Image (tube, rainbow, N blue to C red):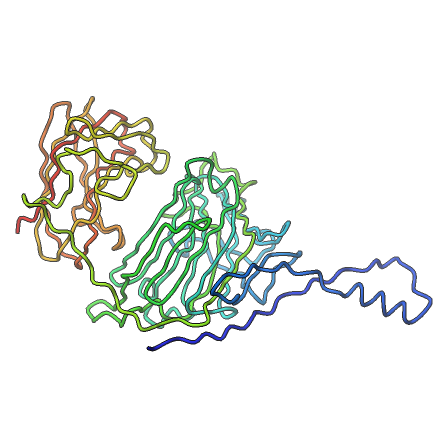
Length: 469
């Protein structure tokens, strides 16, 4: 059996030196001077990282002391708009990345430049210091709250060009939180060409990830990656790929079979969180990281094969939607059949009653998917044609958006986002589309009721997705 033997060396750590009192008098003997010197030069005790069963500690940073350990971290500098249309400049300034009270603080600062708002922030990476292949990355952090703030801890390849530039190279996002919705945390993996991703979320019932510290971790092994928050696993991925467009896929488990490094940043604005507004308090725009620890098993079995994708079979009547007639009551918070979701300020509820899905909105939120009903795991096969049909009506005439999306394939659309007006009388809607992309076992039918200028209750019946050719 082919294995990867890991030889882990502990990283060097900075030693803190106590400062002597310059105004004190000299000792009368040489021995007392030497004794005093030894005392003043003794390093401060380093916080120990806990041991984990089955793992060796590869490297860590507890962020003790007063200065950043540059044996562990680089201060990355980037101009505004470098990626994701983000607004901040990443600088090497102390005000954007510093240590305080045993934590690393990444701080976003708002100022003015050329008569316009200007933002700076901090981004650190461990590239060239601690690259590693496979292991458990652990970080404890507290995120800031505020529209347009986007903290993240993530991993990228040491050699981004080994399999090709992003996303072919792969990316592992240990955690991300949007400051506008700090009760929700995300773990994500990016890969492939075409771009694909898989993402898991954790939504707190009480409080938010901005109100206290939480521990985020990823266990990365050959053929499988697992995400945890406070020790609870919420996402497992084992079916990625990578390829250059028009060529065969690289041997699995590429691209996640090469050295990666850890990085952390606090972004401002961008395509996902949106820009800050008057409600964003930059005096509190601080991303606090208590520690970063990387562990590694002494040995990994690299003789792994990719699991075959499983495609849902249609029901006897040809419908790929399960419980499309809403004949059965369901737990709409689990991952079985229908799921009701709220994001970005959306408030509402959903229930099944009398063969009808009833969706009530209390706050429409800021994006289409703020109030959302979905059913995933729809088999989408390249070259096939499909038909979506359903009946719908509302208490008051209003718009909703319907689509078939690809949550594990870069959120492309198989059925494009389609805005339709739902009347007060029961009406049948029909949409046909042809699937022209890579085969996908996880297409997702979406009904999006957010940010449409209405909170009128919507009623849905007789939902079907069927192959017509």
